[in-house]
Image (cartoon, rainbow, N blue to C red; front, side, top):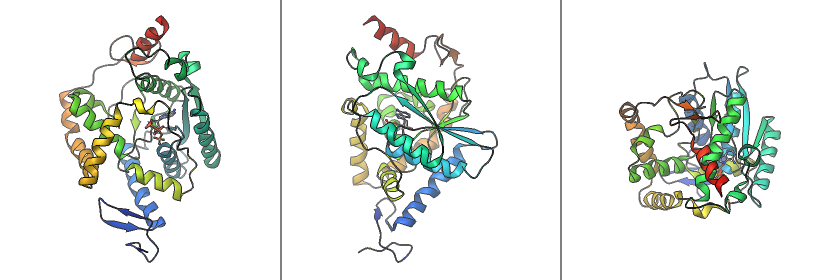
Length: 304
Ligand SMILES: Nc1ncnc2c1ncn2[C@@H]1O[C@H](COP(=O)(O)OP(=O)(O)OP(=O)(O)O)[C@@H](O)[C@H]1O
């Protein structure tokens, strides 16, 4: 059995991009150190007093909530709330919500659940029957972000932490580069600019590969669901996931390089694409151009 590089215990994993073998304890420490550093870098706790974590019940957001909880519990001046959006996806969301409740009970964190049905009038299963030229994920992403933002604003959250990991971040960066959507690159979260009505989103797990969050959740007995969304195969992201996986397997460390290149040019992107003042849509959500995307999509759906 291969031993841990830091002690005499058996290794549970090999980290290819830095060549280390780690036991359970040292692996957990390796993850926690980087996540806590990211939380500190992305959050100014002198100003942030009310933290929301968007949790779907998957491994990443469940790990994000657990680690945010371990940072926040040492601070009496900061409150933590979990937010879950119930999109109305049969055979998927009910099971994941069960896991969310279990974790919130375990950590004693207040949970706010908001449903598409109540917020936009349709479940995702209803919407999937009337997609038109759009993919289900196009609707789901827009409505979900709107629900998350509205709830976070209602509870006076200063930030929303999501479970986006290193793979998610590298995919988003590559996707926007290859599409030539440079302006959107400047706006990717973690958000560094504060916009009225839009609660900034942070990514505590942005340095952690997906496989590591999975292992961390298992080792630390964090309840989560690994059920897959039935609409997953339609996600545009999947193509970029395959490309990045291939690059990473040939050249370990590629995902970290994509992220650090992006971080190096982000200040220049922000300078080139200065923040547009956000107006307010009639629904109350911030929008750069009058009617927000969610209202436009809803109008399309109502016509059908
Ligand atoms: N239904 C939801 N309710 C609350 N937050 C959500 C929901 N779906 C996604 N999120 C947030 O957006 C992040 C990225 O979404 P994604 O679809 O990749 O998550 P997932 O695969 O369902 O689960 P996870 O990222 O937790 O493993 C999640 O980590 C979570 O923070």
